Image (cartoon, rainbow, N blue to C red; front, side, top):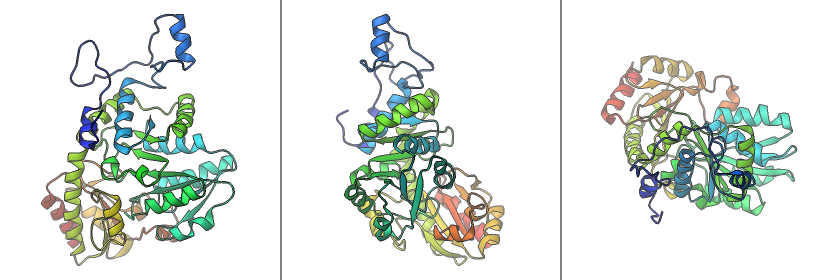
Length: 389
């Protein structure tokens, strides 16, 4: 693939055609592959040949999906997973040992926080947190056993932006592995490897699929680190199914045009919300009022599809708002063609103590909108009637 343009890479990166010379790649629904003879089988299992052996290791459909994301992210190699969280867990499990330490941003996805707080400590892997506005404190958190700096940008659900270059410089200075969850931005809007990230993780379930159909995850980055992740995953089995990989590879062909419209709609919705009398504040990366607006413009092509805002009246007003929504979906997903609203304080983050929620910007009245592809006037009208009723 000679093109450097993401739009072309997403469409024209394909596996080798079969004897039928198909224009669109077929589904390879097979669990295993045959060998020509005993020597071919021996050499394949000895890793002397690069070929498909078993679909838990690799499959033409998953390989195509991985190659596309690697090209779009500027990564050397990658591995695809059954879900975003299997990508997060397998990445940590593959590169960390008992006794290691992680420095992480506190504003991360709830399941990732559970992984860091409750699961990895079982293997004596500890962590320290910094807030989104405390990057100057990161170096004080680094210990002799620190191995990883981890963050999301934009963050979920408060849509804060972290300075990726600064994080990358700190990681390089202290010889740490810098990992970024790039789910909210997608490879189309942001490529963290340019800013020093060693590994980039996506929940492909979100904007990469874009239609709420399948689960998937992927980690891409340096060949050396991906080899560790590959060996761990080959033997533990969190691989992406060929069918889901086929869906996700097809989805990438339309990712740029979809995300362009998502972002266009999201900016209109954010601008409307900022002017509404029942809204205290709005957080959207490409709103000039966003605290990290200039940084977002530097790191991202556009602002993404997620808007966060605080409704007046706290947690009860947030619940009432959800009950008054008519068109938009109440769902835990995001990045769908359909717009989705969630109220984190009463749902996804309800089990987290209030003081911890507030440290990550999750107030009682915070609403997260995943802006879809409906006509923006219809989205605005539904939000408007819910805010006023």
